[in-house]
Length: 73
Length: 197
Image 1 (cartoon, each protein chain N blue to C red):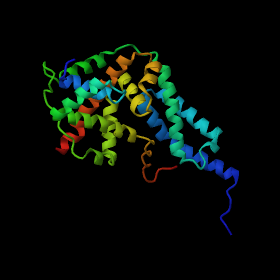
Image 2: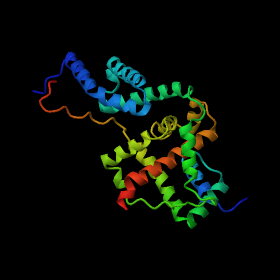
Image 3: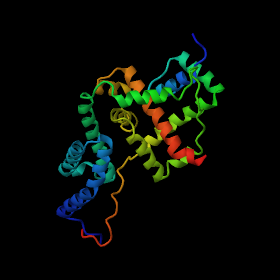
Image 4: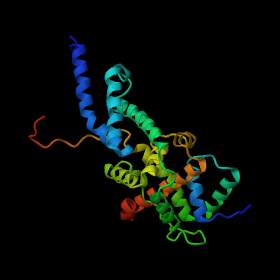
């Protein structure tokens, strides 16, 4: 098994881990890569943040814009 | 003496005026997700009708707006499901997005420009302006990708459910979600966090 992942492979796995439980060997290789790569650590955090942000996105529709003053009902 | 108990008639009137106020925001919401005027009007109509016919459903459980949005989400999922089956396998804009993502990496698989950390990202979540930028980024995704991503992250469907509903393989679903996430990461980096560094 290839021990080292490229950042490109890593980015795919970072996305995949948001959707599925990855096999143990993948998780181990990801851990190793994350220890060594600050850029991928950032992307890992950012993908997790994206999920939190999406959960907060328009949970409820926004208020309609206020009608201009003086407009009839 | 307590407060006068509202009559049934008054309550119905209140419900209808509240729904009238909700109509526009619900419609805008549905349009953002479906990007189809007629379909958005259909799902909003179905939602309002459900509320008019069963107003007792929400009482005491949540605010009307929250309840209405919950119903609307279900109607949107149904609409997406119906339409998901009619979509072509891969569109040109998805292919060009794939190329753009490939271009982020050098031939050896390293980042050409290593992504930098985002300063205090969770603080952005409290800002309406950030949420508008995020919505703008989602809207810029190729349409089918945007819908699939919304099904996953906003409607919180599992990838299995999405695969079944959109009739695509698990692998293809994963590829599409990857494209969407990478594109959104890039978009937020440029349009929001880039300016904060």
